[in-house]
Length: 141
Ligand code: THU
Image 1 (cartoon, rainbow, N blue to C red):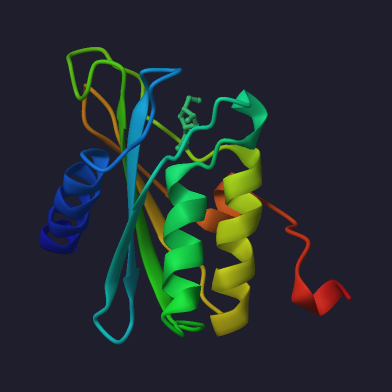
Image 2 (spheres, rainbow, N blue to C red):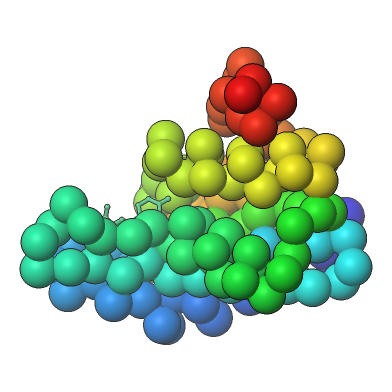
């Protein structure tokens, strides 16, 4: 599992380079791993109208779904920040909106992906269901 974790975090780190974050200076990369072996990444895209900014995780989910990926979301890696992976840096955990966006894709395929969030001290590991308990989703409609 740790080789998979390191590989996915490396993909997320590479995605940080694609971030457009001129307003916050907080660049984030996310990587999604699927059961079919696909890895899809995203980085945050900010806007001069600040509230319209898109988080890395949401960009990655939109990209994956636009490639036709609907099932088998197994793992999510998130990294970045102002001082990328410096000692003491807090982990970048998905914001509330991103948890919901990730949950939709996970629920479509019936998985509860592991989420790896990199910090200056190591990697925080959780299940998406821990980040978003009692999630609302397609089954509720
Ligand atoms: N951001 C993400 O892309 N993902 C997260 O998990 C947390 C926050 C972005 C949004 C904004 O562009 C910047 O980080 C600062 O909040």
